Structures are given as C-alpha cells and as structure tokens.
Length: 114
Image (cartoon, rainbow, N blue to C red; front, side, top):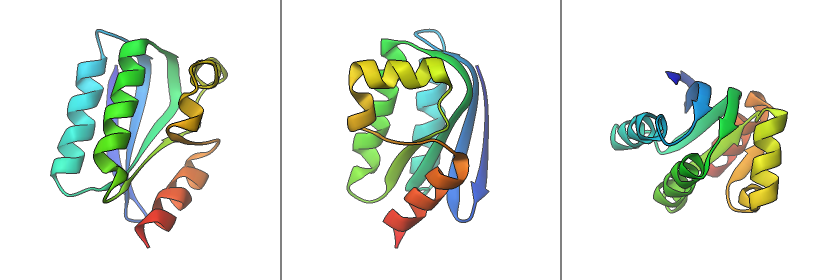
C-alpha cells in the first residue's frame, strides 16, 4: 500500500494505491489518525488506485467516519468499480459519504466545513 497526503482547497486528501486489506489497513488507519490528530478535520480518502477493500479496510472507513463526524468530515473519493461494488454490497455507501470524483469529494468535505 502506498499513501500520499496533500492539502487541496483546505481539505486533506489522502491518496491510496494498492489493496486495502488486513496487511495494509493499519498503515491507512495510522495515516488517517495522524492527519486528524494534526488538526485536519476534513479528510478525503482517494480510492482511485485501490483495487480491493477487505472487511479490515471497511473497519478503517467506519472508524475514520465516526472520529470525524462531530467536528469534521470523512469522504471517500472515486472508488474503482470493484471497490464501489464492495461498498454497495456491504451498505457502506449509506454509512460513509462516497463521491464519484475527487473534485466532488473535496467539495462535499468543504461544504461540511462551512
């Protein structure tokens, strides 16, 4: 799993590449937690280069969404077709905000910021 983080229009965007599974989920959760602890309360996780999400990865989404729900936002951006199918089958698309593009995800997070 490769991760990169950058501010985009005042929103922290964390981009992931690879598979989000039991082996890599701690790395992703650590990065998201570090960004929140650094004061970034509006976070977008870009899934455009993620091929697969396991139940361990779904747990990371849930933990992050709950952590940021009261004073911020957590938005998933541009899931690949296979990841979008997993989100839909598990109902996570009703629990966590999912946007089809990075621009839409940043706009959604920014709207919750104002």
